[in-house]
Image 1: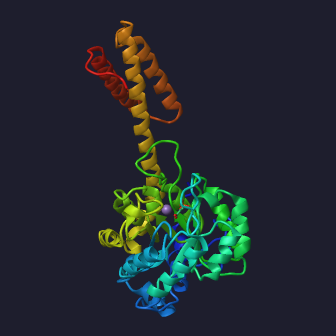
Image 2 (image 1 turned 90 degrees about the vertical axis):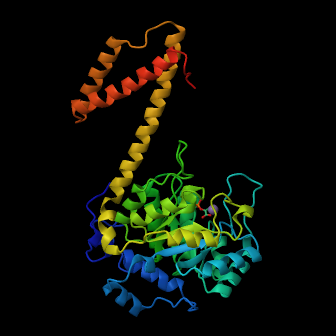
Image 3 (image 1 turned 30 degrees about the horizontal axis):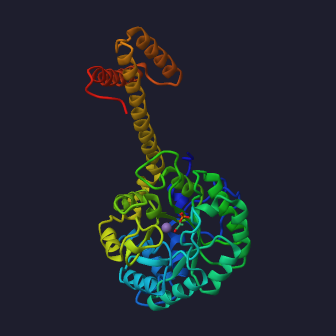
Length: 417
Ligand code: PEP
Ligand code: MN
């Protein structure tokens, strides 16, 4: 975890080249909130009811204490997939009624895990997405995975592109996309790769930046994890936080793909804002139950409205401290969760030993073995700088709980499973 970055750096009031992963100053990239404003500027060319943010607004905003992040948070909402003209137009119209929603997302080409599933509506979907934009004034975003996708998305006036988690894992694909976009100035949202590999994510930014694209934002969508967790993709908050400490780009949190369900969306969105996310991506569908992809995690525009109204958007000043601590806190959360899973596994193995002891008539407590284990742990812990008293307390408590569990097994009250 890199901790030498200050928030001043992130906000662009102080600048050194040393922290920049590419070793060059990002001169055309102003960072943090300012960069977000720049993104929004580009993303709001339509000037409908939503009064585009202009340069003067930005100046005013920066000096006005009344200006909160609710005004600048980039809320991107829309269906996982564009499925039909009616579906995208109805969803877009309902979303356009929500003032916080600043951009309409809609997947056109869907990367599916298994064949024969709905793979998106392709070029026809782009026509519908453009209609939705014209009907509402909402700028649009879609995922591109190949140069052909780029060509078509630009042809149908998509306003921003995102690179999906499955594409970011492949540097060949990322390079092809960067080459295809060279010479354009379209905003590109780069999702984290499926694997928790910060360098791979940074490398994707580097490829786009080298191709001359400067309107870049990071999208945190969680990581594939080897164990079952309550999330579809484990957040590992410390990774996006570290990314924003290394790179001056806005961070958008895709809570839908992190959660994989509707229930966790609210708390996860709040956590993202508390950890200083600059925006949220949330999948919304006019009728989620019928969605052709990701039905379980999509919500209605009405539900989105409620979710947004229950969020606390923090002012920049108040979350500076939060941001400094966010990476470390995220790491502690992950470690605690691993500790809990390890404890549960240990208890399970201990229960199996209990069964064995019962079947072989062996006593539960074998004091000599336990004393030796504890002494070894205390010695190993001391080598790692851990106080003997802590090791003693922790392992005594674990051992006690194991004995009680095995005792219940002996008395036949309980079985291991
Ligand atoms: C999506 O946004 O619909 C999508 C497929 O996302 P990801 O690449 O994060 O899985
Ligand atoms: Mn999806």
